[in-house]
Image (tube, rainbow, N blue to C red; front, side, top):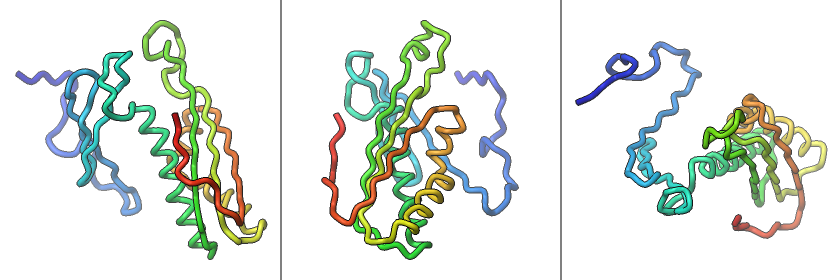
Length: 176
């Protein structure tokens, strides 16, 4: 038996007929039990899970860890795009996010928002570009990154630390 609490039309969830520059983003998820969801996006499949301590199986990142990783990935894509437009040759880009959320919001034990309350992001870029061009890169990336602006529009205080160098940074930083 299927029960629709809110009637939905067959087909897309949102109306069609949008302007050509409006890009759709779609995802589907199936609950697998024990706080685990199988997610399908385009031709990709991945899982989202929770730690054992909160009822998950710890087999995949949490939803909020996926969001933090998405912010890192989105910033990197925008850095590469804007650098290309400005003629900047990138040698290395590293991003490290650290965010804090008040779990009482999710648990329903306090009247606080369940999303991030603080977000810090370190962006390390290795290039030989002059400082004047790097400032333009920084401003444009911060203006044009959808994920970063989603956080800001949600009222999350975001601290960005940009580090530019001609020498390589330690790559593949692992976050505990």
